[in-house]
Image (cartoon, rainbow, N blue to C red; front, side):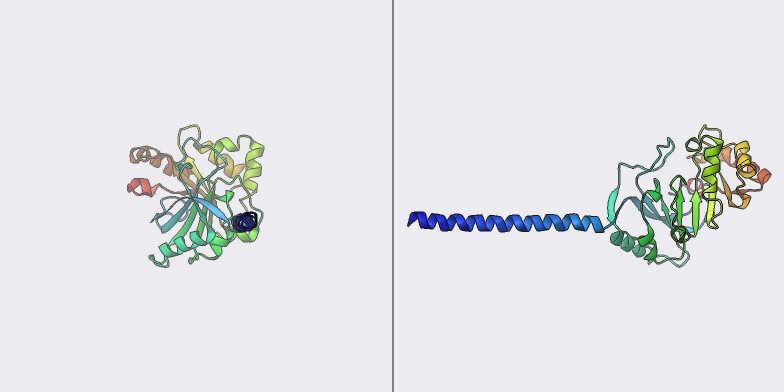
Length: 255
């Protein structure tokens, strides 16, 4: 009798344990499958402000700053150690929620880090605004022309150290210059990573960048620095016939 009940109890324990294992296994498979089909993007921050730079300077925007980059610039303003993984659905909801509190004039600016490390196509198709811009270093070229045309402004900031040779620069600019929505933003100053007037002139003459697509921006992270670099950049823009843009968020102590 004891042997019989022992057998029954042992079978029940084995059966229940097997069911738990099967349920755990199915849950694990579902979790893994879900993570595969649900795209996630590392988001550093999302905030509302006024665009301080480039062709949309002065306009209200919601900045979506992603984390991660293919470069390690000494002047980077993104803390890549701090980010939150967000699914496309959650990101779309968050952006549209913020847009609902603004008027139709508000833009969305996708920035980084390097935003082209991530796929934004699904997010862009579901955002409730006609004005979506992206700010990139231009080193990652997506050949999907339909995708690139979805951006109102595709603002490229060439990093001088990453395109050191004339052939590098020629290949780099030829990848982008013929797109109608592309604008090039150069930081002007005396630090090694900033551009000089002669280098901007070279971009116009040797690499045939249209002057109307070039924006020269004074270098500096403080107002007193812009007070020095601003007039210099202004004069260079006038000499070369390019656009000038400031750093309004620094001038006005904004973000």
